Amino acid sequence: MTEVYQGSCLCAAVRYELLTAPKAVSHCHCSQCRKGHGAAFASYASVPRSALRILEGATSITAYRSSATVLREFCTRCGSTLFWSRSEGEFADWVSIALGTLDTPFATQKQKHLHHACAVQWYTPANSGPQVD
Image (tube, rainbow, N blue to C red; front, side, top):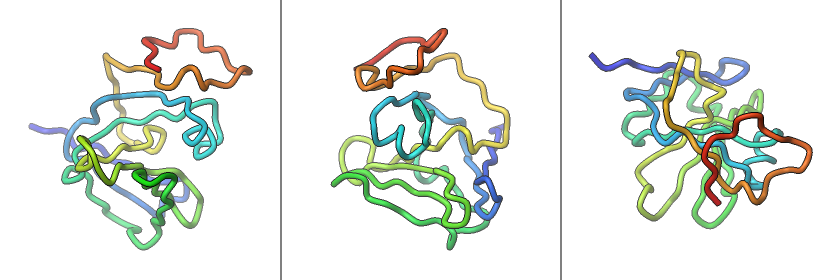
């Protein structure tokens, strides 16, 4: 039996479910992810776009094109970062989910830190795992 993962934004206007376990867990230190999350890094995992189902609040989701090929989606009511995706390339049919919005417990054995060379100087992770630049 496949487990369904539930998630929502801070104000719960947007509710979604994932029909498959998130994959490719990463913590991105690039400036766009930091600014979008307001944190030292952003934690994401990906699913095929067909595995993401918006249950409530589709009209409360707005999008911002942060670069020519990247679309970031967030709640218009509370500002929660929800998803990002690429419009072209190898993973254009996948969507990355902001892991902090998951309501269903989720554990992963494998994760990585991306763009570590861009990391802020004021945060030093205790156990950052593999780093990919």
